[in-house]
Length: 100
Image (cartoon, rainbow, N blue to C red; front, top):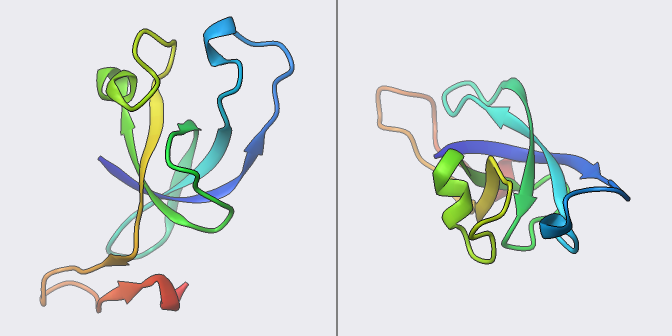
């Protein structure tokens, strides 16, 4: 699983018919220690995530196991909205939704 922050949306009027009605979001991949972006990923939203929210992503065959995506051509899916991220004491301080 990967942490990310929703950065935007993707609109594709022409796509595989199995992706019709699926919301596609651009997610900035986050390093949990620094909070810095390490790249971007287009993901199918399965949980109703919104702009700026920290989310949990899964990829590969795990993405196709997410709710409503069985047998769909998906390589990345948003499967959770994060409330807080807590690292062990030897890492950076605790971050929460209020810190964003």
